[in-house]
Image 1 (cartoon, rainbow, N blue to C red):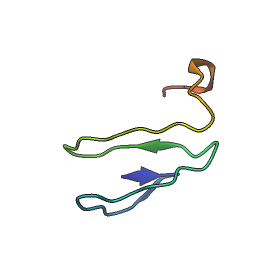
Image 2 (spheres, rainbow, N blue to C red):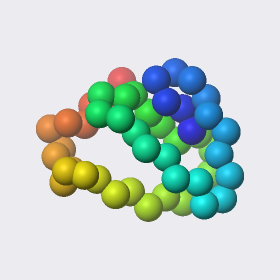
Image 3 (cartoon, rainbow, N blue to C red):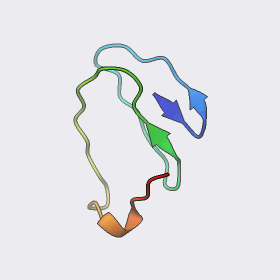
Length: 48
């Protein structure tokens, strides 16, 4: 996982809290469950 440009190693069943405004991306092959609080708003999403 990459959070604000820093790679963070993860393993099975890892929970990751992503703070508001944190640029993040998944690296490698993985399955996720995404829980958004508050509800997801497409206007908050951006791509490089």
